[in-house]
Length: 621
Image (cartoon, rainbow, N blue to C red; front, side, top):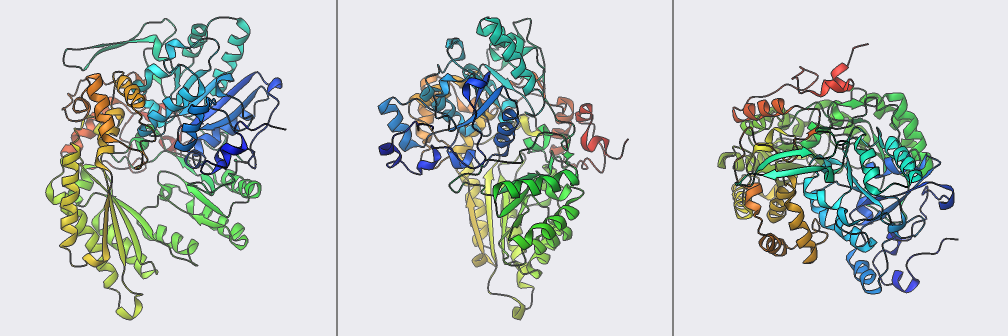
């Protein structure tokens, strides 16, 4: 019988003790003496967030299919347990075995969001693993990072032994095989890192040297080890239908953020929104075939007992067999009381018809993402959505019985004007008017249009990677322009408005396009007490600014200065598929307000066709 790492007196005092006990349905138990590799898979956030992440479930299942490997899970302890663990010197442990993370061969950390970076240091610190990769010995695990933020790993370079760039289903087995070989060799840590660096998609930051110009920009970025590649090619799964997928995902004992079965119907997106990093780095769009999805849905629902299944995709409406899939799910599972969730739908008649069918019993709010308030700005960002389509979609939604609509926008986009900001309120009002065009006897009270704005953060490998940002004060002023415009609308009583934390946006921007110097800021912020920065109750902008001051590094350098066309970026050594030439061309088209067709309408030559699969080769034998 397992012995829990935490005593009863601790578990009874902390919030949600089930975060730390493990033993959930479908969690994998193995004999540690019968495996060669122990892998601790970490999501550096609280359990409820980490257990909602599909990528973690995919890799957990994939690794545990190997007889020689036992993959366990670890999450950031919440602040109450964090304090107890430090006081009583309890090392961070994995859920399955309840054993210290420091005893494992690998600590794999998901890099999902820049504002989780201080939690990475928390995980290392509580595990007793030296924060700096250069200080680790044979007694320490190899720390590897992966996920979307790994496409600019440089702010974290000091803290990681290696990074996995791309889809985890491709070369991870090769890395584990290399580790087994190295483990039997008796060689030092550097020898394994050299073996890993030979594998396509693996980046070992200690094998590269960075030099800077007097103005602080990069002068060079070169490998200094013969095993290191000058370019790291992002790994991409060509055939999603044969890729590993968990049929028995772990089912938490407590409610988590995404408490439902998840069916990833495709990866990538055809739309080419210029602000969207995921839409660029996950190219090309690659669907899973219908028969595979049907069988997977059957298995997951049978093996989990979930009462809801969600179709995961960057743009569900673009899955060509969506109608057939939804009809199957309805026929197969609705009699069993299984709800179907369809996020990421576009505003069109087909999508609304689908939504109406799956929400016949209870019509919750519909969510649309126009992203910008004016057609000019939607053309700048290449949203591919007209005002006419938005209003027609809203009208059909209201006619179908919905009363609540959520609209998502961004503020601070390149070239934004006051008219663009005010256009958010104007568009929200036009949507409300569509509701009040319905005869009064057919309406059920007032409608509710909730508009939310986040502040735009330029991300690597997007056409907007050259864009400048704004100060926190300027972002707030932009939100106030929208708020005032909302008050001036005819249907203001039906309009609600929220905006994102401006200071958090500023900080996210520094890490999104940061270089190795940002590691010093991160370390100082952690030492000053920063942790769980994406949680409003824990975020301290003042402490972060103190960290910048103490290290002599300016956030304005990363956010406010113009970037030259030929500037060497910290992430330029990574080949993400889309070429820099394509991204620059898209930036220039954005400045002219020119629209680029989606990938099914016309190939734009972005470069991702080199991967040899997905939408780039649709219809070809």
